[in-house]
Image (cartoon, rainbow, N blue to C red; front, side, top):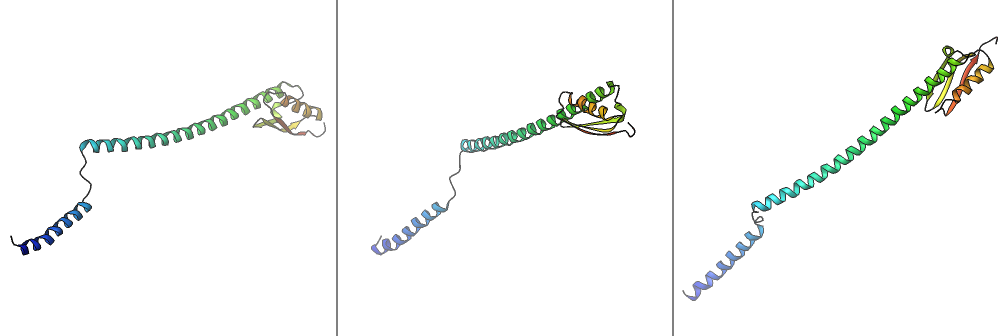
Length: 149
């Protein structure tokens, strides 16, 4: 080859090397092996499993709190019903009071007596009887004394 031929080839060769370098820079990552793909899939699955487990724990905690709340409300309702029954039984045993004439409402351990009592003493006795029942926090006596007593 002559000297002028090698001068013409040099820029061409430099251009090819530069183009090859640019193509290599823009080329996507080398293909991964099957093992690498499996490892990445396992890592993603483990991450998703941890997230699901955390979500499940949160849901379980919420369900437990809701269950505890519902249980407490049911327990309070049962306790209030038992207080009402016991107060009614105490009023029925008293010869001066009529359990049929007295309505007993209980909420949160607070007893409300409504209806009529034959005398002021009987009205006061109804309050005493209600207070004597276990679990009673307060008694609101709204009994009216029958006129003429």
